[in-house]
Image (cartoon, rainbow, N blue to C red; front, top):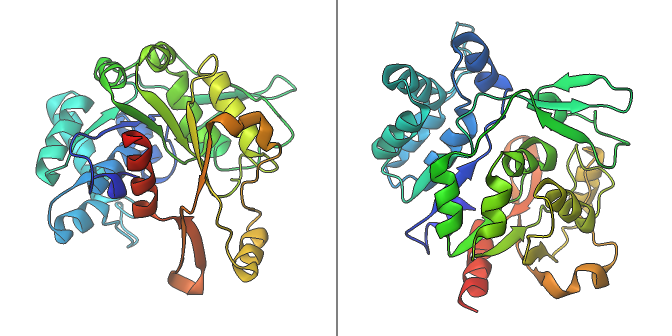
Length: 304
C-alpha cells in the first residue's frame, strides 16, 4: 500500500502494529528487551526514496550459520539505534532520515506488550507468531484477545489519526496485526473522533487465522475491536485468478475472500480490479494486490 501511495501522496503516515514476536524480531525482543523492529523496518523501506542498494541493505538477511543467521540488517540497525538513543521513536525517526522516507512511520504504541489469546478452555496463549500465523483460532468465531499489560496509544499516532484527511486500514493478518493495532488504548477513541473517511482495503484471500471467514465476518471483527462501526468504505477486489492459481492456493489452505450477503454491506462496498498475478521463486504463482491499482482507486475515492 505504501509503495503504491507514495507515488501520489506526499504526506503519508504509516501506523504500525507493535506485537510482532516471530523470527528475527522475536529473538531481538527476547535477548535485548527492545521493541519489535520488523514491521517498522518494512514500512520504512517501502517509503524510502534512497537508492536500491540502501533499501536492499535494510532488507538484507544474514543466512549463514553464524550468530546473526536469520537477522536482517535493518532490524539490527533499529535495535542498535534504540539502545543508543534510549528511545524507539528516536530510532525510527533517525532510520527514516537515513532512508530518506517520504512521510512518517509511527509505532501504534510504545508500550512493550505481547498479544494474548484465551481459548474456550480458559488456557492463555501468548505470542503473535502463534495467534496470527497458526490455526489455533480455528473454530473460535470471536476469539478473546488481549495484551499482557496496558498498551497506550503513541501520542503521535493519535495526532496523526485525528489530523488525517483519509484513513486506510490495509490488508493484513486480522488477529496478528490489524486488530492489535485497533485494540491499543486510545486508538478506538481516535478512530471514532477523526473527521476523515475510513477505508478498509480487504484482503484478497482468507488467511490461516480467518479460514472460512467472509468479508462481512472480517469487517465485524475489526469493528468489534474498535468498539463499533467505523469503516465508511470497503474496497474489495472483484478479479479472480485462474483455476490453476486457485488450485495452488487451495493446496496452501487459502481461498479468495468472498462476500456472503452483499445487501449487508452494499452501501459501503466498492468493488474494483485490484489484483495482480506474478511468477516468483520456485515457480510459485502469487495472487496479490497490485500496489498501483489500489493506490489509484484510493485516490479516486479520496477526490470523490
